[in-house]
Amino acid sequence: MNLLDSAWKRTEILYPLNNTIEADVGSNVFTECNVSSFRDSFIPISWKVNYTQVDSLFNGRIIEGNQTNIPKDGAEIFTVSLNITKVKTEDYDQQFTCHAGKVAAYIKIQRPTKNYAAFVILILLLIIPILICILFKIEIVLWYRKSCRPFFHKKVSDEKIYDAYVLYPKISNQADFVLKVLPEVLEKQCGYSLFIPGRDDLPGKAIVNVVDDTITQSRRLIMILVAGLSSSEEAPEQNIAMYHALIPDGMKTILIEMGKIKDYSNMPESIRYIKQKQGAIRWNGDITKKGSCSANGSFWKKIRYRMPPERQGSQGLALMPITQMIKE
Image 1 (cartoon, rainbow, N blue to C red):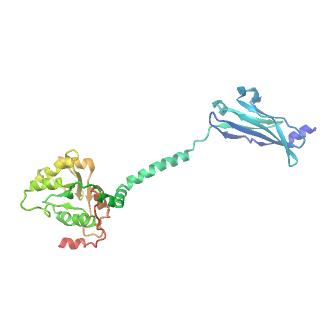
Image 2: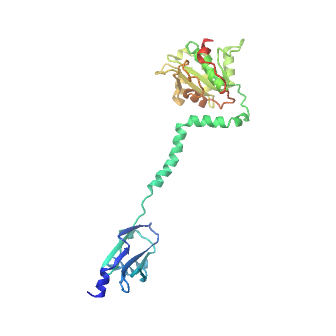
Image 3: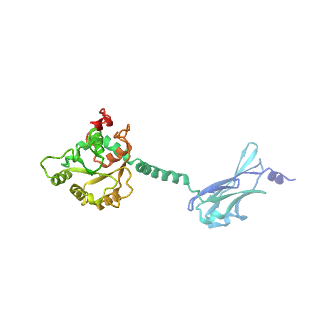
């Protein structure tokens, strides 16, 4: 066995190791073939594609460097560089093979892997705040109003006297809710000013004039709905209120269902229109149940969300038990 055969048997390619390199089209790729062999031996090294030297291909776009060698730990390390000056699509199909005597190893150029993790994170960063705003919209708005309440005091007055006009069917059995529960929560706990017919009527004035004047001076219309209400039972004040609610830029309306109302077909068309446009808030609470008349309850948060910003709060007041209020 001659010295060259012995050297080849001890020859080892340290790099490449049949691996891949990610690179975009148009980018530059620079790599090296590192070979370990006997000290004081010489192993010719070259880069080839399909057994043809790269210098003979690609019109100088891919360049093989000069072979160098350095002694290290009793062996000789040979190095030959490969410079792909500009990656083209055709390079993705090639094996760039380093030949060192009888041993060889290659690299392959591949397109960079899509960074889906970063894309997913970006989408989540966009979606999560939106979902939070949708799911906690009411809490966010109420918190914002509370935090910015001092600024609301400084706003120019809209010359309205009442925060809401309460319209309810006189023939219903919901007087306790309208005359006691609504004022307890919205007026005492939240600081709103309500006009409630039957409680705030002005003696000596025609009902039609009172309704028109007070609705004009109110920021919201709260309408209490009960099952079985029909269009034939429309009162004059309801017609006036609906006029103000349906005109362009009219007052905003808050519909409150007293229990589940399955059928709206017999109700006035104006109510059906408002219900279809903005929905209604359903009261299923038991006024004798603890916490049902707290302004921080789910039902009342929905009401407060649709009301104007609270002007003054009195949530620190000691509240009278609702059952005692009703007995009075």
